[in-house]
Length: 399
Image (cartoon, rainbow, N blue to C red):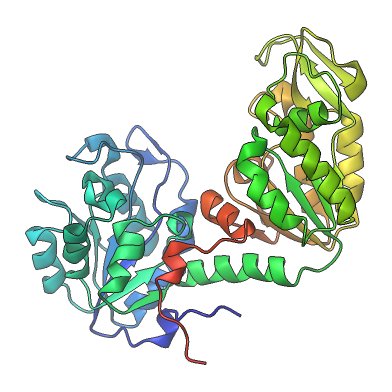
């Protein structure tokens, strides 16, 4: 059960409501090319507008330098897409300062059911440093604060954990759904619980693997980090990407899995390449026959079939990280195999943000999984068993 108050627990009518969203959308030539994050926040925004709130949208976009306006990181294209989706005007307020006098005047002029958007929060250095003056400026814009930015909830920034110290702070509908879904998976999964972990570095996934050892029944390993595990088992990995300083850690993880009776599964074959290119010469080999002059860029077909069978029997599946360099068609088969198995499974299937989402969309399978998380870093932090600053800052529901 989600323990924080949401927008449905407070009276928002006639109130200025600052909504922190994660509208960090990919742009191409000034146009939003993937509006998923905007669409996911629409239920919260529409609820507020329908209940006569005066809505101020705030988000970051990209990585500006943080001390001045940069046109390529302006929120204007995002606002234009939001206008199309909402069917009502949305003004973008910039001025000399983000959340400065112009924004304050505009917020006070809002009428019930109207909406405005602040320029990119990261145009001000105070956002990332959680500068108190910037926090106060943001807080002055609103009577109620709403966090619906799950994708940024792991960051202790001014608009995430700073503003809630000064105004009543509640959760948006998306944030509540994300946290409740992932927490429920960790606390009460339907079994067998299968976690699929890919990506390039064991060092990035230590906390997740360690925490899942106490929760999951099976952990399937893919991506470049499989070569660190293979090295820990004594195999030569050729020119494959491998973290030499993490081999001992990987070896300890394999031992811990045995002690805890968790099935930590490492690939039995890999797809090799003579260069990092889609045009490379390729060869699928067993893990005990990796050539010294080649690099692995995907799990092999035997492993794909083996993983598919494990996924088929699962009650809950969590997937984060591709099995290989799926951006290259020559090395997408492992990731495609896993994606199709997850989509075909009767299990509760949760895609944990990041490249896994890109993969599931690339193979047109997004509508065949149970839940797709909008936050890679935030979902990873939750899976490590850690708190999210953006959630901790919100008001608790009364017992």
